[in-house]
Image (cartoon, rainbow, N blue to C red):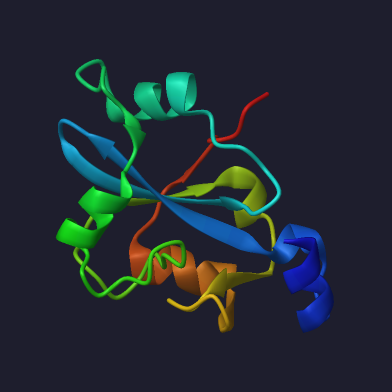
Length: 129
C-alpha cells in the first residue's frame, strides 16, 4: 500500500483493497484500507447474520471458478456478478480512494461516493479493533 501510494502520489490511507469472503449464503466483497486487517471472526460474521458460521476468505480455487475474469489478487468491487459489497467506514470517510483495476500494474482512483452509489454498498465497521 505504501509503495502504491508513493507511486501514485496519494496518501497511504487512500489505497484500498477488495477482498472476497465466502459464506454459506454466497460471496461477499469487502473494501478496506490496504494497510488494515479485516475482522473475519467477529465483525463480518455478525454482519452476515447468525447463519454465517463458516465465514472465511474465498480460496484461489473458488475465485478462479466463480470469477474466471479476475486476475487473482487484483479483485475489484465493480463490474462483475451482483454480489453484495460492503465498504469499511474508515474508507468511506475518504473523498477519493484508489483500487486495483483488475491488474497488479494498474489502479483506478474514484470518488468514494461514486463507489458507494455504483456498488450499492452499505458503510460498516469491518476492521480489527
